[in-house]
Length: 316
Image (cartoon, rainbow, N blue to C red):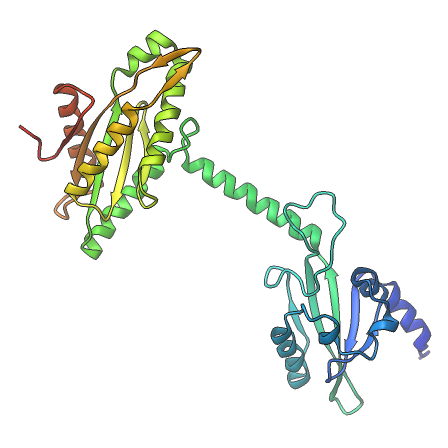
């Protein structure tokens, strides 16, 4: 069988479109191919014989040493994908579409090179540029995230849509029973919204809904959960909040919406809401019972003057 000359072998390694370098037990570089030279900016003459970790102090040294030592001890190859660790070397990439990726994504393989006695003498590390795969994966994940968000979000108001909001409410009610915490609910809708649409037009009505939604976001806490229940009706789940606390929230919402300055085509549109609040009790059959009681309080508000809130049990 013909022997491959060292010169031919070296030429083959140099021409590979992947990074190849070889280390001894002291982390000294024994081979450094053209891919590594091009991307690191260091020719092989500046690297071979030098300690890799001293040349590249930015490498994850503890992790890298453990990887190399594992190959020497176990005598088996090892592999690290870009999803586990995006890159070993902070090489730039030349992709015009980056998808938010700054450095070259790399798959790394650690290969034991054994002597005639079967002992590992050197470790060969290959670096495969998988930036295209990484960018595609990141873009796909971004698309999937946006699709997931859109499936949960009301398109006009950007609050949670009814189905997902109700799911969140159901979870909070179950959590309050399990952990003996308090969960309360505010349900409210816009007063005389049909008149707004009739007098100013449906586009004006849409603008009112958007402005009200923004006021809701600015008024509630980060832990509260706001959603568009339907049409001009909204709901806010007040987590870890009893009836006293949710009454205060209802008043804040009423006041912030009343103070809105909604303008559409040089017209100022006054906006008020009627609200109903209730606190969840573990005796309720489901979260729907809480919605029903808060709705009863809401309609009580409407029947007793609007632009106000009422709580369940109903005020007399």
